[in-house]
Length: 582
Image (tube, rainbow, N blue to C red; front, side, top):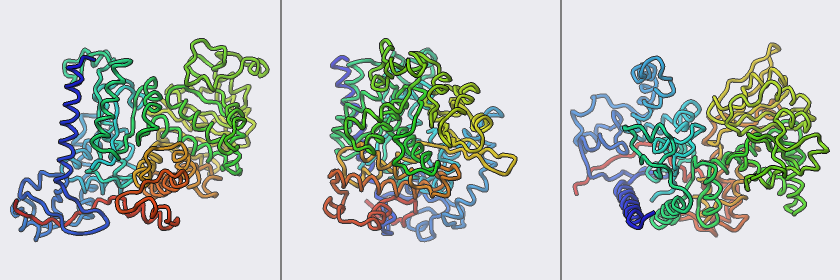
């Protein structure tokens, strides 16, 4: 990159970050911890056009007089619950009006409606989102600063290179940080780093808003990300940065480059891994065994991209930790995995093997004894290995074919598990109907996309567990923030996964339910955040947060820690507004 371009980038970053911090500083807010009036320096239409302060019909008569709102609002005063009820009542009609014709899916129409609400009344938007989290979380997700979500748009939800259109995923993730983790919406910042696009359609589209040039590569690309990280941490030294939807070749490199010096994590690598680990531990519990038996499980993994390798590394560390964290423990844990990519089974005989997949390549002599060879098909591997778990992170829809699922019938497990974790739905390796129809009602099924449960003629239900990243990343982010830890350690991520795995009751896991419903996300996040803080204390990483210093944080018992987390979760409540002339 030329020096002139570098200087322009640096100047632009500084201006953007400077504007954001100034914007945050002039907008005071009231959290759930207190109900003091908020002083505002605007009246009339200026208030109504400000989504952070606008209450719509919920402005009291006193506020209407003080803020010069008489005549600008309908005469009736409504409370926030009445507003939400009215909004939900009108939703059906609004959906139809928002659709662009019969081909426009309802989910997209709902997204438009929610987006409009967000643009005019931010408090009500988050109240609606929290109250209807199970329905709306997939819609917004499948979209001082405390939290930044950054993407380069190169690998969006299995859709590929979307260029600057990938900003939606950063916005959606931050909405869930607000709704699930109680991060104040005035302290979050979505970032899209435009380094070009390799999408031929976008490169030729005259209406495309991003840079119409090939993506930067090698040292030029690293220089851009380095400069972004330096600018961010110069402006906000304690910010947490979540990397989102970076293509595999950069996901691992950037994670290793920054994770030991900055408060950052990669949701695709570490978040997906954590949710998968929680599900795998849940599958152990569903067999009536303790989680400590996890290192005995045989696992076939389909997919060796960033998500697949991330799960493999996390699962190996989890097993090794349970076995004592010795070198022998790591070797033993590594032997429990068979990895299959687009070229088949990965063995030491593979030419030009990906360095990230190298540790999981099976030994050629060992495979000869098992009747397998380099490049063996997924069905062949499943048939010979007889795994406890078949885990899909391939982004190849239908990969778990009838032949593969039939091979799983030979599993030595009393309750085999199928994890079809790829997103979106069309990329899922199989459907629950496919799996249950072949393997029967006793199996465990989990997916990355939402599917309906399968009902059997005998009245039994085959539960479809959605293992979504949204279970973990809000709690990891909140726990890291409140602990004051300088990094997000492997132990903190492990604690989050184990907390999620233990969340379900024994009765629930024995029914095959290994993930909780999204409707419980606020409580799940609170518990995960507390587990992350506890682990940070164990690792001597805590630095404290605001008035709670490290020493005081270490003295909190379990109940006090939960209260500390809850008290620091923002809630969307209307503050009383008082006008003051400048």
